[in-house]
Length: 126
Length: 193
View 1 (cartoon, rainbow over the protein chains, first blue to last red):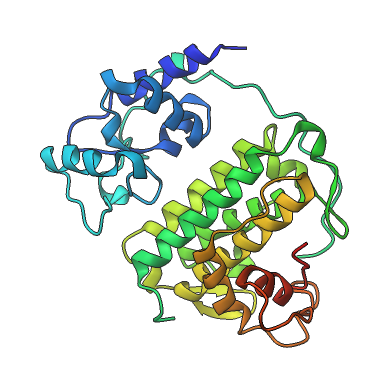
View 2: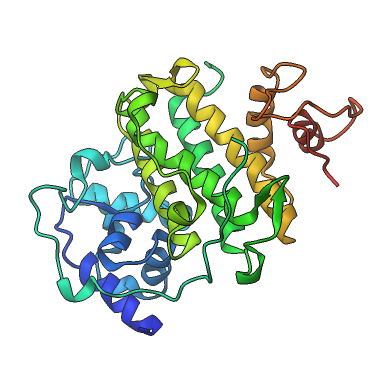
């Protein structure tokens, strides 16, 4: 089981590859690393200063509240269009589903510890 | 649904997702088999939300209800890690609603064509009420975001007085002076205790 620093490092490795003028989401980075969006956000907020953390947004293209103003400033400085506090991830999202090379195979095998079992039984309503 | 702009609808939906995510994050490993709603374990409840949010991207892409394939069993929906399963589904639905013209579209639900603005409002209300269910079942924080309660009350007012069998329980009677959260929960057949 990888320790927390391995996950942090894997996140930083991937975020470091987002080119200027492009953005990604916590979930997209998480999918490359094998963790969830919150884990990515935690890695970046606790030690992402050396990588372009500002190029990582929420899945709806908005910035997380504590860093919103600074983040949108940095993005605007890179020529990223921001409309209604939102970046168009469909247009600028990295990596492109089809063309961009998925980075770092070495980063792809990290998993975090699981939360016990997923439960059984079928749902009866809904 | 002119009461909220598309940007507001998206922001409220995102907040309702965060409300539910916080409560999924707070589930103890030994609580997944506890009863959350009649006939539903905590795992079933979270899986239900995962399923609903997996439906969102294909629905917003215009696929008809009858052609969309989403797993319907709890273990498949939650995978190895329920938290990651939920976050992944939530991330996908948020990204789909955030596409530039997503909220101008019509989705084809089982009951028929529905404006995406109505659909996101229903999803937001659903997250809000189920956040309370999950918190109540797991000893978590039952206090709901006041603004989300207001959103859900807008939807609740549209429900028939005798509920929707299999989906919404009939409303409970509460005094008109009750808090908005209590009135909301009562509208969905739940007692805010």
